[in-house]
Image (cartoon, rainbow, N blue to C red; front, side):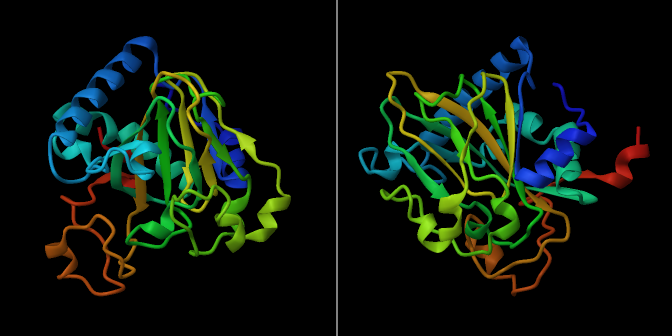
Length: 268
């Protein structure tokens, strides 16, 4: 993995709210990520929870096949997404000392799949933070033809926590933030093995997959260490939510493991 970040890359992320790192994985690493992700997705789809395929013909099911918390059920996936070097990248880009995993998820846009409406990520989650972010690893070439990501540069600086769902109207988010209609969007096309980072408040979406092949990606969202509960359950287990009050620190190491802290720098 090419996990070292330079000053220009960090500055670009700060200014634009996203960063594309071509060639993050070498060919052997890419094949491992593909294999592990496919195995874990098959396991998750065999269960009744944490996937969106209960009605595979529904609009959202055809936006992408979404399978969450794969690290819980696949040891190799846990090894991949909880890698300290990736955790360090997340902390460096966010400008924080420590970083916890919020959740991982595979997102496979199916052949001829629906577009992904413009949206923000962090407002869905159980914490509110301008330092939240996600990685998105392309397991296939991501192109305008098969539904690559698009971004509104700098939107993370203006975004509040108002959001819309990923529905059939592609531009609903612009009714909430009409000023973004005047900003040129940026295409996030990238080759397989690339890593894309985006801030949890960066507006993003994707076009339809107009090809007969899937567009596969493995992603993981990160929460700054010390973030607090905002009252939304999201994917937290109900029994855990019952123990929380607004403002409580989300520091359960089983639910949200700490994957990097700057104090570890000197630790062998």
